[in-house]
Length: 116
Length: 113
View 1 (cartoon, rainbow over the protein chains, first blue to last red):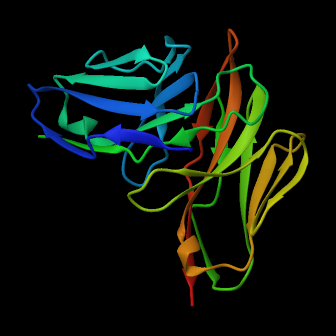
View 2: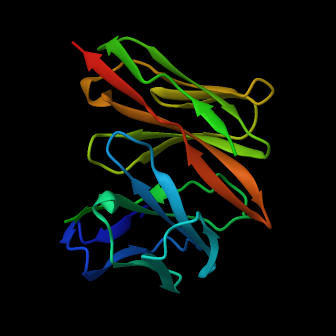
């Protein structure tokens, strides 16, 4: 099973709303990632968690708040977003760093977010 | 930081062979990945190279030359469903036992009958 699931598939929110994106994997991966992808652009790394601890924050604004409650789940809490934050938000997972093998990242289907 | 270059668009004929090139500059190279992404969908993993040479997986092959900072993805016996964007991504050591994956801008491949 190489499936990463994300909910919801689509989300429309106002600038004053608070919402959360969820990601789940059951591959035993200990590294999980959030990416943001705008139309016709490559994915941009936002956050990386390794062993449930935040390892990389790519200077993401504080209106995006990640959380990793356990080794299978990754959340992205959204608050006071701007219209320019509208994008496809992708979650990915891989074996943790330092393990042998390709450490291939497997992506979920994404959440398409629209901020009004 | 790193600089990853790949052609923006390519067109090829069904049944033919196409080669998509990727060049990169990085200070802490730790592997190169190719992903396929259909419009509106998530990227899916195609191949991985960390050592020089050719990796073959069915109709897809990927080549790496670390000394030249160069890779290519070779697609054989093209099918219409191969029309997609192909993303070259370089993994770089970012210190403290961690790494990050940076994507090129992608090559949009159109397969025509």
